[in-house]
Image (cartoon, rainbow, N blue to C red; front, side):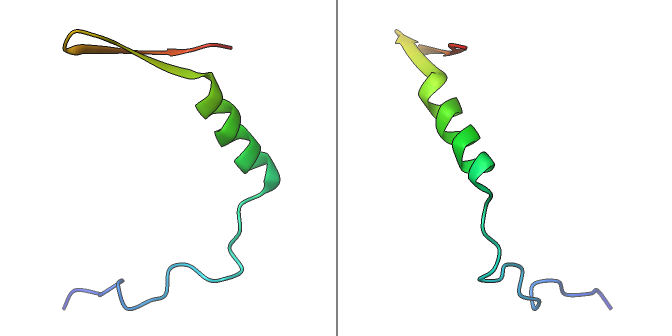
Length: 47
């Protein structure tokens, strides 16, 4: 019989991201630029 993994609790309340992870995601989102030209969209990262 197949093992059901959905019964286990995947996340606990103690699982919090590190400050470095939050900083990386915020900096990445600030540098990401999406330019739409007609029906096309171009993604660029300004580093």
